[in-house]
Amino acid sequence: MRFGRIVALIAGCLLILPAVAILVGGALLGLGYIAERDDDGFFDVSLNRMETLTPAITAEDADFRADPGSPDWVLDALDADIRLRATGANTSDELFIGIAREVDLDRYLAGVAHDELIDVNNDLEGQFTRRVGNMTVAAPTAQDFWVASSSGVGMQELTWEATSGRWAAALMNADGAPGLAADVNVGAKAGFVLPLSLLMIGVGALFTGIAGVLIAAGVRSPHGTTDGEVVGHTHPAFSEWTHPEPVALTARLDPALSRWLWLVKWFLAIPHFIALVFLWAIFVVLTIVAAVSILFTGRYPRGIFEFNVGVMRWTWRVSYYATTGGIGSDRYPPFSLSPEPGDHAELEIVYPERMSRALVLVKWILAIPQLLVVGVLAGSASWSTTEGNVNNGGSLLGLLVLVAGVVLLFTGRYPRSLFSLIIGLNRWIYRVIAYVAFMTDEYPPFRLDQGGSEPDQPRTPPEPSVGSAGASPESVDLRSADAPELVDSDARAPSQP
Image (cartoon, rainbow, N blue to C red; front, side):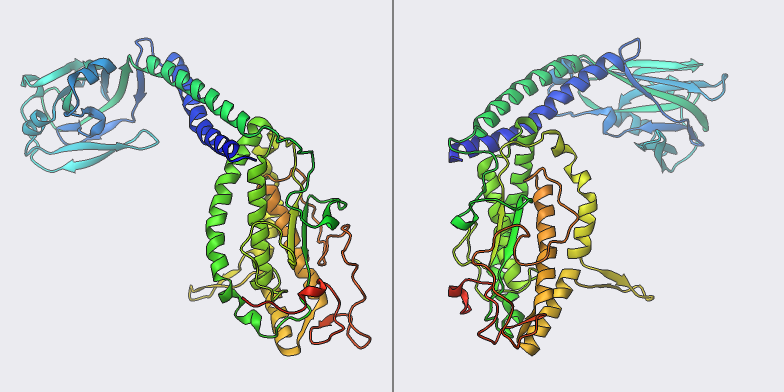
């Protein structure tokens, strides 16, 4: 894939997510504007009953304020109206509701006990804070600073056109007496909602179209690419894909393994670990891009596929050299995404020309059983003591590799059966990774294929019989010149970094 197509694809995939979000958001806003308004055109909500033993309940938070620094024309253009309704708990209650400038209301209630509404929870129940003071205050109906107010028996309603400034609302008894209970409904009407909805739909549709063009330009099939082409092969012996699984993981045991080098391999591999941190971060981002591309085009971008396979291949090399892959090679892994001559650990994945669009949406759900298995194999264990201390242990794979390392340290032999098991477990893990990374639509089998070679893959060169006449069939004597030739002849001497 050319650089320009990769850039177009990434730009299109990154653009289409916010574009579709804006488009859908505009559509939902328009539907809400049409369906959720009452007969007067207000969006409203009824709060749970408000009660207080003080003379007043106030609301002075940002929900009742307009930024004083904004020009007057901003709120005028928004054409926003606020409506408050209050009904006393008793039909004979004479209530007062009013809106005033915050500074005027604060001056009026200075030294007077009242409850201030600071939040409304998901159950529409108000959360209040008590302002301490005395219990007497002049009747609110006698004040002249209210910009909108209503008082009387029964339901009281006021409508106020929002203007620039800092505002607050108050709910009181009409005579200012302490103790009140009322049901409150708050509504808002804004003339800008419908134009905003249409604008969002238009902008979202425009950018969705642009993103679609970029994605289409990025996923055009390059000339010479065929369905099911194998990515990254340099060895002619692997030109034919004969085994049934789309992921091929192989490993060849170094016949000249050092007894002790595995103890420090993790330290020698630190440069690789640092590089892989950044590579896997890119892997995750590109996988998301690829998922979007598959969803809209049915294709996994070839350039991204090759890069992601390279990251997995690099990881497998380092893992096989130093960690849970098996510590089965003393050859220092190359800093490369591509296959290298003499690799003891190899990973190849068939490139799928066409993929299921719908499957992208459910692969992670379908993979849950496989992920549970991988968690058992590669996840760490933890346990707690009666004193509450939490202890963490290694993974099953880590334990098996440790056993192999200890046997190697004291005997110079790498247990053959253990080698086959470790590689088989890693093969299972990498098949699952490829599936959840959308690199194949074939569900990983619940099958442990042990051994260094894929079950149906021809071995090149053919593997001779294990060990010399005196060697045990269950282990490989790494000190013997007659060790099984699981690696190429030019890889007998360990390569140190």
